[in-house]
Length: 525
Image (cartoon, rainbow, N blue to C red; front, side):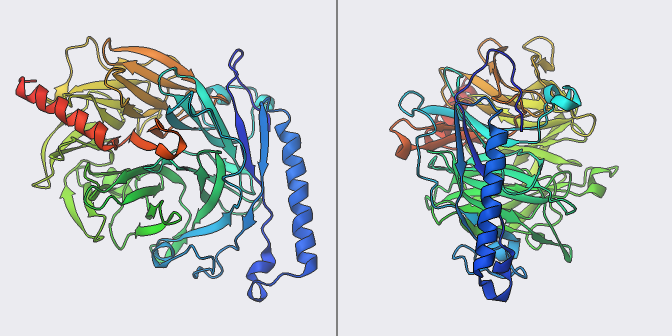
């Protein structure tokens, strides 16, 4: 598993590999093991570990950690396994615990939290143009992982790679962090020899960056079952109850789902599954919670809707507590990026196929305006500090997916901005298939951070000067997708998810944006 990096970049790295041998006898004869079964499993496990250690020797990392934990049997007949984790909602939505580790809190801290208390997390996987351009004999095997970047110095302070048991065939898109900053979530897919792709999400103890659990999706879908790859992840706190949630959003293209809402304070069990019985048709897997956390806004669509001659797609406004929803109609052909004003009055929806931006009145649950985004194939969207501008990622969705620019959109005049020179705004560097953005939670910094799905850098734009301020290389020259800003100002037990690609998530961040927006509105801005 060779790793290729550009010269001169030597991040601190922790490599965590989960290597396990599945014990088929656990599903036979009521879960019993013979001594021969155990001996064979241990021998296979040790051989796999030895092979991985040999591979890791070429990675040029400072620390190699091989993690081995307790196995849980795979779901037999898709019934509730006696693992103490599954419940009615996890079974209904087809999410299964397949591995659990008893040492995720053991070992050194992933980084010096006192020196780097405010960090930005993003994914890393094999999809960058840099890796794809290497000669075939120099290309590394597929890899998946994530890394933490100091949100001020822009130094990569920690990185981790993961694997379960088969060759990795799809790296992570979304990454997420629980509202208290204790748990991380990274998804990937593996394909056994001669088999079909299986998709997983690793739940990670952030302090050590070790795996705590691995969950597998095998979900009911239109009378059959399917294992969609994990795409996006977001987390939030509900204002009324202080309940904390994380949503795993599965699928690609125009028919995602089912999705799963986890409760990170209940051993990351499924609080609620969102299946086709709840929201149908379920479109591209981009959901975003309302600022008060009461609702999820879920893209509704399908392949035939994306290709239709009229804007027949919709967004479901899903009540997290009751599991019911209202449908907001006419949001284009392929709704993707979704974000909200922090007063909860408006939702903005990006249509990736028609390159339109839709404005939704959240009280009326109706579209009250739409126009061109000013860029082709838009995807993610984030708002500035006073919510007078939207930055919209020009991913090139529906074309070559190689967009390298962003639209600066004036939300007051509701058209692409004319105030900052030529638009779209070219990002430069390795920008390619740029897909998400997030506002830095410190107003003194005043930056937007951008993920780069086929590049090998995180891109940072200074909103004071409207220039690219930094290109932050990924540890293994891979690409990035999801994102989360997390502050640990009082140490590991003080973590607060500040914001992600869905917008501000911490109350203090939301309040600052709301105050700035009110001041701008009062000033006529």
